[in-house]
Image 1 (cartoon, each protein chain N blue to C red):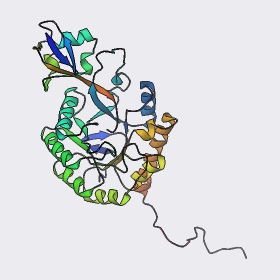
Image 2: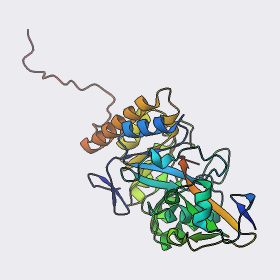
Image 3: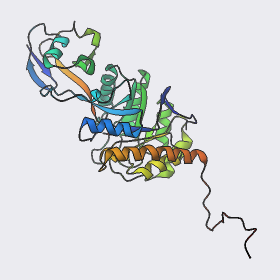
Image 4: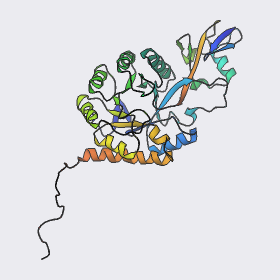
Length: 259
Length: 68
């Protein structure tokens, strides 16, 4: 768990603890506006073949300026360590980031990670000098292993990708926070602002989301809501919440009552 | 000469270089990564790298995407 005022991952300082995805928006203008409203400094992008036949299509990077935002390429859609490593290398060759959000998916229906393949891919990429941010499940043992092999952060899911189910197992997230020293960034599962606040109140270092914003009826407004939720949750965590009690405790003095 | 470009067969002239192919396709060199037969081509070598018959060429870029 990072105690820095700002989130630092692999020596890179993030200006916001909210990291956003760039998928599922209706167009690049909406992507741009929502990203701006979120206050995020880091945005994750997918690596794909360029459309050769239809060059009228604009480029995402014309709207999300890599000089303004930190680009976090991901290996979304990769089902083997080999594919994920290849994708990460291609992403780095673009020359805008040494970071990679490493995903090795194990099952198309749940999009849960294949953690054995994830660890294998992470080992290779760490050795090649990548700043590796692995998407993993909420398993403290795997989180520790990822830390031990040199990942810069761990990104446990809170619920399946795109499900919006919220924080299904806050206890595991807490155990992960106590298990590793590297930043813990919840990646996937957030549905609305209160979920993001809960992530931060647990003491997580950051939260990454895409569908919760892009899939909202008003993505730009939701992006702003998420910005506030992450700040509020972080502040509440730092402030230290009161303990829960079964009975009431009056907050007015008992002396000086009018008789 | 035939190459396979992003999974589709394509006829290119002899001595076509990576740079000239991208130019022909109207692709900004700064926004893509090129891989030939699983080997990533350094951007500085785009002008001097030409294709061989049957090369498997991938032109890769960044698109919107978050999680898988």
